[in-house]
Image (cartoon, rainbow, N blue to C red):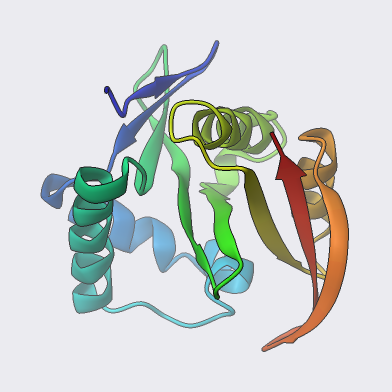
Length: 166
């Protein structure tokens, strides 16, 4: 099974060791890490672990982290992926380069990941957990047809959990 996902405007390719510098730069951008990592600054070692963990996850289970690139330009648009959400299941995550905000790329990339998870991977549902202050990501979840099912405490305050079933 190919793990490359393509949409009308984007190509999602599994992250690899050669992507380390791009991921480190992207994930340490303050606007990106604000909600994705609760403000935490990732180290080079953290990025290495993420890349290695993703490669292992793709090999074992068929999912992990993808780089999002614009189809026409090849320019980095962000990242998307699937990761465990506690013991509840897998959550879709995404981050965009701030210059790519407002183009609908988060919804387009997240939809590709959700469709892949519910289709070829065979998950019964996909989850996401969004900080209350992250209105843009909540709007993405709603556009994907995800419905809220719980509010939990998070490092930055309340977080809403969403789900979408097959």
